[in-house]
Amino acid sequence: MNKLYLIKNSECFQGEKYLNKNKKYFEGWYFKNVCNDKGISFIPGINSNGKDKKAFIQVITNNMSYFVNYDIDDFSFNADPFYIKIKDNYFSKEKIHINIIDVTQNIRINGDIKYINSKNISVNKLNPNIMGPFSYIPFMECNHAILSMKNTAIGEIKINDDIIKFDCGSGYIEKDWGCSFPKSYLWCQGNNFKIKNASFMIAIANIPFKIFEFKGIICDLIVDNKEFKFATYNNTKLINCVINDNLFDITLKKGDYYLNVKSTFDRGIKLIAPVKGNMNKNILESISATILVTLKRNEKIIFSDTSTNCGIEIVKS
Image (tube, rainbow, N blue to C red; front, side):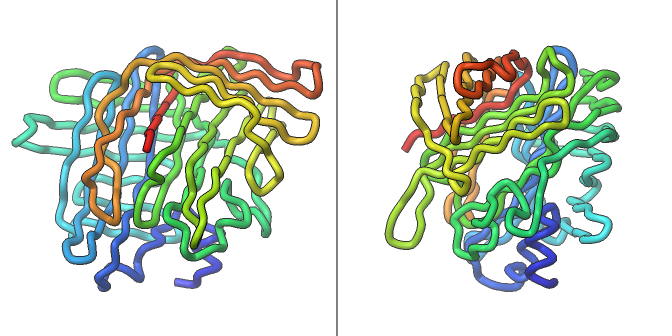
């Protein structure tokens, strides 16, 4: 498939050229769904350590996680319209259908969620997604794309005998691909603010770049359809960064704009992350954290609000 098309349409499967090669590679899509105080996220993907290739689906709830392996032949994809399938499971930007059965973990997860009213970040030729011009660099260790900053999630998911209903839910969709997650990073996402039309994400990571390393920043806040983007490529500076085991306090500066995000969170649930194509690194993710986001222009507060049901990962080197 045309390389430029894939860059402009980052939701599409980027790794088709590696399926028949001995390449260390991973690609995963992240579908987060919350309603009231309950949430569930699905991460379908593939990984290759250069020899063995597998498909997988990770499942994260407020208090449990599951990792289900599939044969690589169970994985299929389509570009237009975009969707991926792993056996009987279907994922797109418009809906997901889940039918997971794993006898060894004693779980059966099934159901459907429909996504409507999706809102995403602004893009252009120079900045085809949240990574901006870095989207065009072919040797990045890990690529990141946002597919939906916020949508309305409608449906229900059944986990064994428990049912999570999404009659008032909100969703978020993103993806990653490359060979490894960054060795250390912070990632946070929230779209359940008291102000209903607000959504937020931030990621700060140590990025290897040929012979040196730099701290990469991507951050986006959308309020009332107005977007505030903070990133390394638009001269954003990290002027405060305090990270502990159950809280963080970060301030970014771009021109005369200041963005501060504070959070307290629980320890999180175990998740499996890729290292050189192997899914073998344990990390922790919470999908029930609370954040306070404040945006100022000089001393004037433009936005200040709290979001619940937030996703947070903090990985230290």
